[in-house]
Length: 261
View 1 (cartoon, helix red, strand yellow):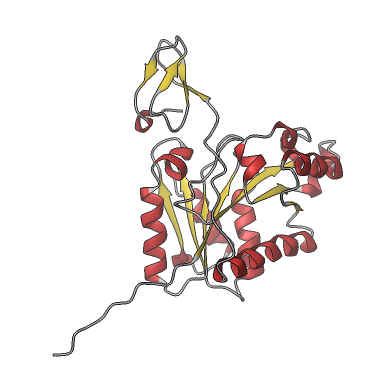
View 2: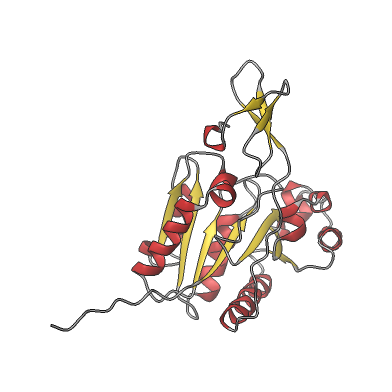
């Protein structure tokens, strides 16, 4: 009898996409899939607390074969599943890589979160942070780990700037300053040249990944942030990485798994 051998699936470049609610994370992924699907075999993992709506949106857009788009329902605050305990996302990525081997790129979309959301480097090789002009021209100046130290900052929906009184060039300049010169790109799905700039960055990242020239960087832990709930205290302040959270009256709340929004 000949012994059967099983080979490990090829390890894809794993790119995280984070940012606040409504900035266009799913549309950014759709833009990338449309621009790169003929060059790369791509898979997508979306994250939401209680729904697979983002995955359904991407399937409805027809940007990839539907079976290569999968949803993770985190059941807790979004940053928990991309930062504190990445197990469910890591398993989903590995399953996707195994089922559709070989994949070149896996995009992991975080659930909508605040300005400090970051991926653990154990989950992704590089991360994009997405803002949009409708959130205000000053938001890029506010900094934080996501804005300041993600591998790429995307200022999305720049075509809306005239309607919300935002100076795009100033917002991009503020973002570049906040990031100390790290990469920033302004994008509109209605301006193909901007999508191509975004796609070119991904191509370059993939080439660096294959060549061993990219090392995943940890943007740093999330800043302390407040979680509202229906308790008498009204919620609690949570700091990722210490396992505890201070309530509004200064006492401690339980583990991350108990988060409520």
